Length: 299
Image (cartoon, rainbow, N blue to C red):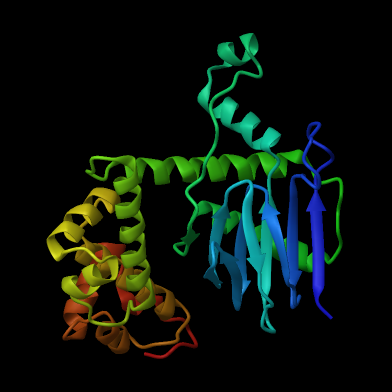
């Protein structure tokens, strides 16, 4: 028998949309299948994989990843495997618009026109796999919901205000990154941005492999030069430099848990010897890798 916990706030504002509410939905080992039209929401997977069908395409949200879904998107959620743990965050249009106004308008403007229209909100729909402030907040809330095991229909709206601010800030960062792509049309710019994200996810999946620029660019279906330039525009670093930094981050995580030795970490990161690895690690992280080995870890 699975566990379902829902937290919601009292009605934030009158709504003409059935079932629209600001709520958090935590599910553990729940076997579900349904077709639905989603409100603005975030689907965050904590364990196993969430499966959806959108526009006849199967989408997989792996553990520690989340998908942002715009209001009105038609979706089909597929049955889950045992071990699934997930949390879904739902926003009413009223609340997200209110938080957006407060973040974009001055206090004087809000006093003069408290309900000024700031334009429609259209989030960049994507499966985000890199840790972010939003995923950290949702992970903390999911743990609290799992531990409590009880639903709550009177959650402080401040919880949703904070999550909405983080989501809007994240969207602002995504829009800013996308805007740096040198392209003639918005459609081309968005497509190039998606391809950069696809290639970056390939690097995330294969962090302990020795990938070449050509191999990574192939995942984006663009030439190595075009990919190198576009990746640098979006991320601020060349793809190979970013890949090396990510390798060191992952090595740090494994060293902290005592799961690998410094020698193995050096090999996984593509260094020929421990000395060179330790020097690069200390330069990037500010401390030596040997100092991360826990008392019960391996040397």
